[in-house]
Image 1 (tube, protein in one colour):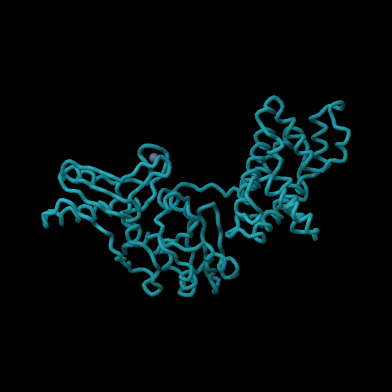
Image 2 (cartoon, rainbow, N blue to C red):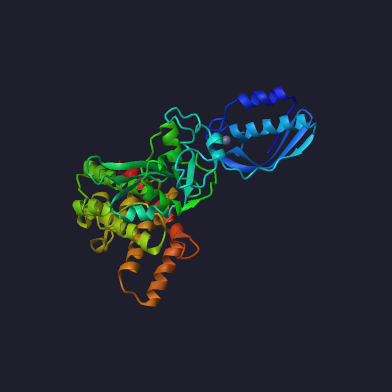
Length: 414
Ligand SMILES: [Zn+2]
């Protein structure tokens, strides 16, 4: 980033302008990044090979955050004192420590606290540094999920909370704090919240503590904590809600109840959570549950009734009496798409239901090696990923397609 001020006063004006987390040019948000920065003030040139700047995640527009401006001001004043006109300023490795979690001694970057818009203007906590982001490998949560003393809830893709149950049973929680995932997938807590945890939990987290990558603004965690915006439910839950809306639309319009094994479905729906790490095992748990709810959770006989309601006798396929739910849903979709059929690729739209089935067969049954390989190859090819070991890519693509499919079903059945 190159920035030029013709007078020191111009710089001061910029210094006094507080930069917000929202970009002033577009809808994007400003994240903190390391940049090579050259600043010219009057006739002096200051070079910072590594300085934190705010950069819009959509349009790439850059500006100077609070603490970096303070560093520039200090550097400029020292150049005047020493009568220098060109200066090189290498950042020091100095890390300030706040009065929280002193004993656990987490790694964090105090510059984040002063630079990220809004964090240091915190009127709720009197001790400085509460809202300093502390970063962890997200695998840290696995321990807390597996031990029954804790409750972990991920209520959106980038926002959740963790609580330790009160052993006395007086309160719901001994402590309860929010956390987020940043755009690099790192787990983030506020330093001040970590201070509420018991020392044992703090120590477990310490093992997963990583260096700050400064990113946090582009997360529902940050937006909800700073701007009180409501976070949307995770895609997995949206898919389930859309399945219910589809069923209720059909009931209203055709008086046909497609629901099947409602109670069992809601039991399985509880297992539908976003996996923390993407292994065949963790992914298969969610896929299995989705297969039960989204494929077996439709009444095949009623789907056939709906097919009959949509297709006149001479339009019907001779084989339709033998069709199972996926094929019936596909034909129902085709009918719904009548007139707009050319713009929608129904084959692709229905593909995630077939994948759920394939994936489940692959995990649940003893298959010959040949059959296993061909099932994997089919999943890989249908979803357009590189190979079967890319479980995260497979999962995200599958969920994305399921989400589209059920959005369509809701929209077209209205
Ligand atoms: Zn922008």
